Amino acid sequence: MKRRTFLERSSMAAALVLLRPSTLAAAWSENHFQQVSIEKAFLDVLGTKDFNRSSRITIAAPPVASDSSAVPVEISSTIKGDQLYLFVEKNITPLVFSCALHGGALPFLSLTVKMKESSLLYGVVREGGKYHMASVHVDVAVQAC
Image (tube, rainbow, N blue to C red; front, side):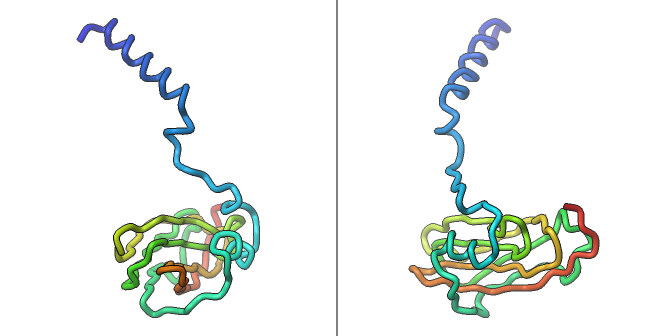
């Protein structure tokens, strides 16, 4: 391919991306990521703050995090849910993660989160309109936020 052809095609592709950025971006729900209390976050996102405590959801996180900017968290569940959420109680925006699960998938998630201070982490799985929750407390030794 000649340089001129490459530059023409690249600039045309860039122009298409710039003209339609909303169709390329993921949906953003502004009210889910606001500075609120954990109870208000549960009500805004889930519509309830009443959950079934479940031993079928496992949250693996270090009891003491040496750096609050990168706390490793794993959530797994034997509940075949259709939605998975992760909340951090004392963060400015408690909702950290949300995803839709398809086909009755068994949820598994591994990520690193940023924590404002020592607090509870809540893993919530929705199964047919019912919410199941587990929580774990993580102490933060050094705050990086």
